[in-house]
Image (cartoon, rainbow, N blue to C red; front, side, top):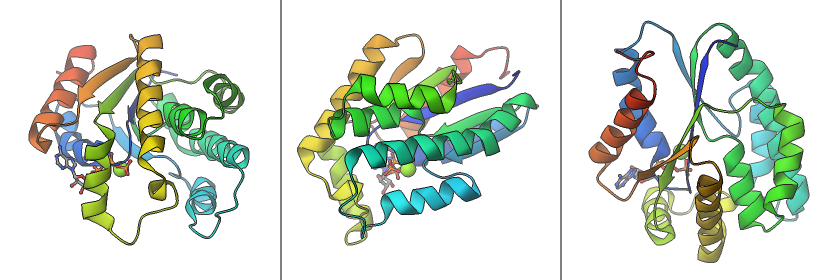
Length: 213
Ligand SMILES: Nc1ncnc2c1ncn2[C@@H]1O[C@H](COP(=O)(O)OP(=O)(O)OP(=O)(O)O)[C@@H](O)[C@H]1O
Ligand SMILES: [Mg+2]
């Protein structure tokens, strides 16, 4: 596969989607290669159906490992339908969340364990990993506050979880970053949106100087 795969990670409300939308036109203006931006969970027809199942607020009794398996399942389908074909066509794929989300949320947040969640994801992704993962780091309180302002009353099931859950998620992300310092780069997401987007843009341009002019 000749394409370039980049993932965006971080807790809810960290500003991933906001930054991605800001930098996308900038990146497009700096390369002749096609850039596609996609997201997890979902991103393709079948994967979106699995997403609805996972995030449905009515599924309160869903078992933690069932949830982890569903995330791994949608991930595989999204890879097969969207990511792999694009990488085979030399495209640049920006994914809003990927495997680190499962390890942080199900492994750390739900306390299934990093190794356990990594192993079911190994089965799903067969070694396909991003060349760069941009990790948006933010204190859990700040991230949660941003979400509250945004979608009060319409939070999904995961967002209803307690502060400690989000702190476990953050700690697991930081642990993953320590284990993979070459792949995972930290962005300080607790800055104004323009500065965050600028930092992300700079990181990507510096990491791939031959891709972006
Ligand atoms: N740097 C920032 N400073 C202040 N507010 C921000 C910043 N970035 C994003 N926001 C606001 O915070 C909220 C969450 O941002 P966004 O949806 O981009 O986060 P996210 O990381 O994509 O979250 P999720 O994982 O839930 O999709 C939005 O209301 C957004 O406008
Ligand atoms: Mg988002």
